[in-house]
Amino acid sequence: MGGRVHLLLIAVLIITFFSLPSPASAARYASIIVDEKSGAVLHAVNPDWRVYPASLTKMMTLYLVFEQLKSGKVKLNTRLKVSRRAAKQPKSKIYVKRGSTITVQQGIRALVTKSANDVATVIAEGLGGTEEKFARLMTIRARQLGMSRTTFKNASGLPDKQQITTARDMARLSIALRRDFPKYFKYFTTKEFSYRGRTHGNHNKLLRRLPGTDGIKTGYIRDSGFNIAVSVNYKRRRLIGAVFGGKSGNKRDTHAITLFRRVFNMLDEMDKSDRNRFIAEKSGKLPVSLAGLTAAQIANRKAAIEREEAEKKVPRHWSVQVGAFDRFTPAHLAASRASRIAPTLKRSRISVKSSSARGKRIYRARLVGLIEANAREACKVLKRRNITCLVIREENSVSQGDQ
Image 1 (cartoon, helix red, strand yellow):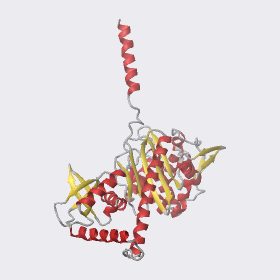
Image 2 (cartoon, rainbow, N blue to C red):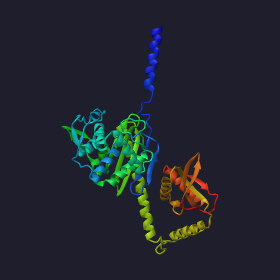
Image 3 (cartoon, rainbow, N blue to C red):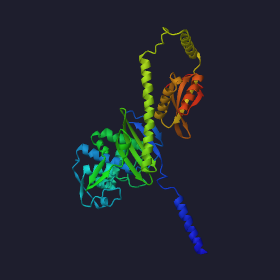
Image 4 (cartoon, rainbow, N blue to C red):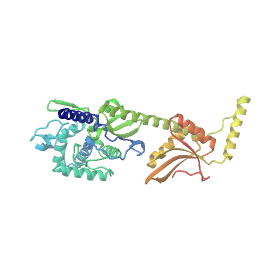
C-alpha cells in the first residue's frame, strides 16, 4: 500500500512539473518602435518594464569596444588573450582556447554573428582588466546615454538577476551605437564569420526577412525569452525597434516584422495626408468656379457653401478622444493620426491634457473645437479603422490647443 502511495505522489509531482509554464513562456513581453531622428514613439507596449537583456547586453560591450577604437586606445588588429575563465564560458561560443589570442576585429564579428559568450569575456578582461570592472563601466556609460533603468553585471548577457534593462533603454542604445560610431555600425550587417575553419551565420534573421534592416542584435535566456533590437531604413526614415519575451526565435521575428509593417502603413497614411494638405494649402483652397457647371451642380455648390457658413455659427463645444497614454508623444501622435483619417476632424485642434489617476500620469489625446454632428461622424469613421474613440461635450466652451 505504502509503495502505491509513494508512486502516486511521484506521478502527481511529475504532472505538476510538466504543467507549469516554462520560464520562456513566462517572460515579460515588451516592445517599442521609435523614429531615430525625431524620437517619436510610433509603437509601445510595456516599454519601461524591467526585463532581462540576455545577449542584447553585447550591444553595450561593443559600444565600449567602438569607443576605444575611435579614441585609438586599441586597433582592429590588437590581440586579446584568452583566459581560463573566458574559455570555460557556456555556449553560445566559438570555443576559443585558453592561452590563445584573438584580434579585436575577430571579437567584434564573433559577438555580432555568433553572439559568443567566451569572446565577450575575452573582450571584457582585455579592455577592463576583469569582467566585473568592465560591467561597471558598461553601467556608467548606460547612465550617460540616458539608460536610467539598465544595470549590467557581465559582458555577455548570461543570467544574472541584477542585470536588467527596458525596451526603451535598448532602443536608446541602438540609436547611440549608430549615431556615435557610424564607421563601426556596419559590422552589424555581417552575414557570417569564420573562425578556425568553422563558419558562423548571423542570428539576426531580419537582415534577410525584413527589407531595409541593417542591424542590430538578438538575444535569448530562459528568463527573458527571445529578444531582438532592430534598425530599419524605410523611405528616408530610420526606425529603431526592440522586442522582448518572444516564445521562439521565429515567433519573435515574425512578430517584429508585423509590428514594423503596421508602423510602415501608419507612416504611409500620414505622408499621404500631409501631401494632400500641402497641395490644398499651396492652391489657396480657392472655391471651385461656377463657370461651366449645370444648374443642379451650381445649386449643390451653393447649398454646400450655405451649410459651411451655418456651421460656423454653431457652438463648437464637442471633442473626440482617441486614447489615454502614459507619455505626451504617443498621445499627440495618436491625435495627429486621427485628424488625418477622419475628414470632419480637419478643422479641429489637437489637445493633449495631462492628469493623475491612481498615482500615474495620464495624457488624454483629443481633437477639440467640433460641432456635435462632426464629432460623432468622425468617431464612426475612426471606429471603422479600429481606432477607439469617445465623443465628449467639453465643459469649457473655449477650445484648447496643444498642451
